[in-house]
Amino acid sequence: MNHLHALSIHQQALIIDGHCDTLGRVVSEGVDLACRQTEGHVDLPRLRAGGVAAQIFAVFTARPRQPTAHGPLDLALRMIDALYQQIEAHPDQLALATTVGEIEQAHSAGRLAAILGLEGGEPLGEDRRLPTAGDRPLLDRLRIFYRLGIRILGLTWSTRNALADGVFEAQTGGGLSHYGRAVVREMNRLGMVIDVAHLAPAGVRDVLALSEAPIIASHANARALCDHPRNLSDEQLEGIARNGGVVGVTFVPSFLVAAGQPTLGHLLDHVDHIVRVAGIDHVGLGSDFDGYDGDNQMPEVRDAADLPAITAGLLARGYTEAGVRQILGDNYRRVFRQVWGG
Ligand SMILES: [Zn+2]
Image (cartoon, rainbow, N blue to C red; front, side):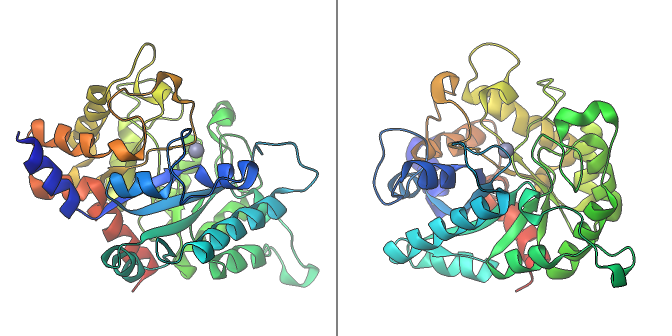
């Protein structure tokens, strides 16, 4: 495969990365996204170099980077505000996207489209009910987060919350709580994408049975290739395919290989496997950039600027141009259009 040819296919694709933890660095380290950093994986110069059109920024509160006296709602608001401040500071480089139209607009104007995703339902609070509302939990915070621009919600991180059990609690067999089910229904009604990365298997089954809209697993790999509890079984991959959803292959070293040094070849093996089991319509990217330690990462993909290596690798393995574009972003775009509308 000709290198220049691969690069031109990469540059023509609308690339969406399903997950990064960079907002945590913005809040706790005061990182300015417009400055090329020497540490971490993501900033605007490197996203541009990597050809990224849209980046999902996780608002993650289950395990704060710094001890805080404030709760998850406070931290979530601070992270959302941090992104808004970055957009205000760099309006020529960065724009919030809440629709696929806005992703495409930002991309054609040369701006990175920032998509807000809540990772873990902790900021939604406990199952609160009014005495007059019978068994209906209050969903006020969910609706307010939607109005703030949150378009994706991962129900749990790996631990348990009021909505469901995360993968660390898989031994309990616990799925969605009553409250979690109410949240899923309201997300369907609002048009918010449900993310099942980190959710325990019983919860994934519940979401697949309950959701009327396609879901995503924004950053997870294939369990058949790497037996990590965060990875998805073939049965789960098939379920997400039937649901019309997307699995974002992730670069987290311990999700690529059980031991040793992961390489781009391992990432491509996960893509191949998910394509075999779920189909080409159901694979995307979910780097988890800035969410893992870089010491043992793939040498070919050290940060966002290295994403063209994935396109070259896919083409070398015989994927068609259309297939590559699907994996790089078109599959997410289909799901987002379907769920968000517009
Ligand atoms: Zn995560």
